[in-house]
Image (cartoon, rainbow, N blue to C red):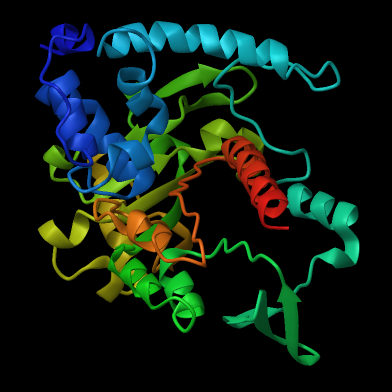
Length: 364
């Protein structure tokens, strides 16, 4: 069925905003959804595929049907996308940048902190640290933004304001000027916890390790995403010491797991938000034991547990943005951005910069 759907022999799209689950079922079938898409969306986005908008979360795949090719086949759209990518690589080729294999993992030599430090060097005192936005109001043709700063309250007048805050913060900032912004409070942000554990190398099952040059028998691979149908609560685990083998003490394997998300409260109680860090670590250890560890494995070293109350929006089904866009004279140009890695964040930031520049040119 998945092959037939990929060729375009499937039902037409519905007249409403389609969820990830609906889109995948329509194109590729139940098996692909349950074994590939569901664990990916749950583990990477911490969302529920039945609620997450396909257009918002996976626009590049969504447009394979709607914008590329003469048929509704995502296979044809995928082939045409490869042609687009080849043109884009030539258009944006920079001989000063290093070449790398597509999909390769990497980081800065001095860690991710190198990026904000470079921004700091470039922008200098144009970036204001410790400035908290209290409100945004309209005074005549100007916007007035009130900040609390280390030096006291500051008022900044401007012709435009670009808001990059999450939905639940944006509704509070703009509520006095744009009451309709309260609709943003309907967007759900599920709690997710990240748990970093370390185990002795010989505690892992033999079939998840390989001989690595100069490293001995070590974890080999990126990690694992866990289908919700397996009834394992942990969403997935990144094998950190496999990706960066020299950042872990000799004799240990380090793993970063994520647990929680949009589907967790529907299946488990108490919810992740209500559990202590120790309880969360114990649940993750139990799940890792089932999948990766030998029967006699010792307790892990708990290196860190962090609960994030609102990491990313888990639903985008309600038509919130058209409501907000219909409120002149103010315009709230919004879009869902879920960035999963630094390179993706940077490319998205570049696109956002262009949109902001166009608004400034239009308004000013």
